[in-house]
Image (cartoon, rainbow, N blue to C red; front, side):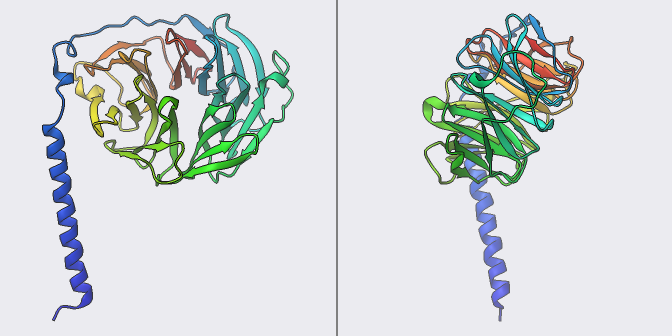
Length: 359
C-alpha cells in the first residue's frame, strides 16, 4: 500500500516531467518559426565605425557611476560620482553649469527630468533625492544643498532612477522592487515586485506606456505603467546578473547586458531572444572577458554600444550581424555608464578615470 507522501512524490515527478517536455516542445516550435532576418546577405556585411572623442568633461575627483543626457536639450548632461558631487554640464562648451554636493558620497544613479525642472540621484543611502534646478545657484558650490524632495520607502540601495514625466519617476532597488512615485506627494503610486533578486536597471518606453527592468535573478521583465499587477513579460537567457538594458528605437525590442559577458537582443512580439553579442562568438577578436556594465542603441538601431569592466572597456556592435565594429583603445579604465543624447548625434561615457567623454 502506497503512503500519501509517496503518492504525492510520484505525482510531483510526473508533473515535473510533463513541464520539461512542454518546455522542450515550445523551444522546438520557436526554432521552427525563427525568422532568417539575421542570416541575410545584408545583415552579414562587415560594418566598420569611426567614433572618436570630441569633448572631455573634467571636474570630478572620484569614480563616475552614472550619467544621463537631458531630453529637452542637445547639450545638457548630468553626472554622479563617488566624490560626492552631482554635476550638470554643458557638453558642448565643457563647462559645469551646476554642482550639487551630496550628503552621501555612495551615489549609484542620477536622472534628468524631461523638461529639466529636476535632477535626481540615489545610492547606498536608500533614498531618492530630488533637486529643483531653478532654485540652485549656477556654478560650483561647496556647501551641502538640501534636496527639494526626498523619497523614502525602499529597503535597499537605489540602483536606478528614471523620470516618467516631471511629476512621476520610477526607482529600482536592491530590495528586489520597483516603485512608481508621485513626486509632489512623495508617495509611491505602484509597487512592482516580481523580481527575486536586486533590480539593477530600468529603461522606459513612454510611447507604449511600458518599461523594462533587469535584475540579479538573471531575467528581464516588462511592466505596464498603468498596472499594479504582475509583469506582462518575462525574458530569460542570461546565465549571470543582468546589469543594464535599453529599448531598441522602434519600442518593440530591447537589449540587455550581463555579467555573463554577453549582450542580448529580445523581441517582445516574438517573445524570445533573437541575437547575442559576445566576443566568445568572434574567436579572431581579442575581446573582453568581463561583464557588461552599460549599453545603448544608436538612434537608428544600427549600432549597439557596450561598456565593460575590463579591456577593451567600450565596444560598438553591428546590431544585425552581431560582430564588433569598433574598439576604443584610448580608454584605460572601466566604463561604468553610457548614454545617447536626444538627437542621437553623440553619446557620452562615464569612467573610473574620473572623466566624462563625449563621442
